[in-house]
Length: 96
Image 1 (tube, rainbow, N blue to C red):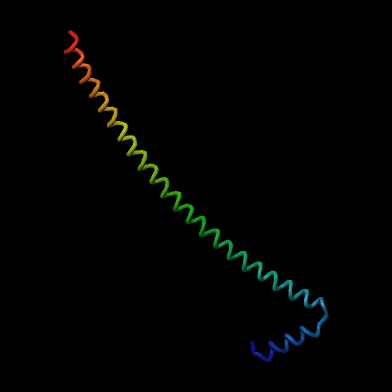
Image 2: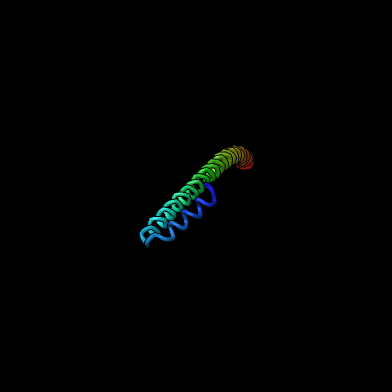
């Protein structure tokens, strides 16, 4: 758009009544709302992706931690059973 045409359009709008300004402000407001909505929708989508990534990482951590805990419990159960057998053997030898 040529600068002279832009100045003429502004001059023409300035000579109109308040209804023209209302329409112009309404258009400006709607355009602003459109761009703000797009911006916040992109922000929400990005946050959703980040939350999904954190949730996946946390689930992986929980699975690994639970597997480690099960392994530790299994090992401790084996150790307790072994120690109980040894104590039982000692008890039999000491108590005829």
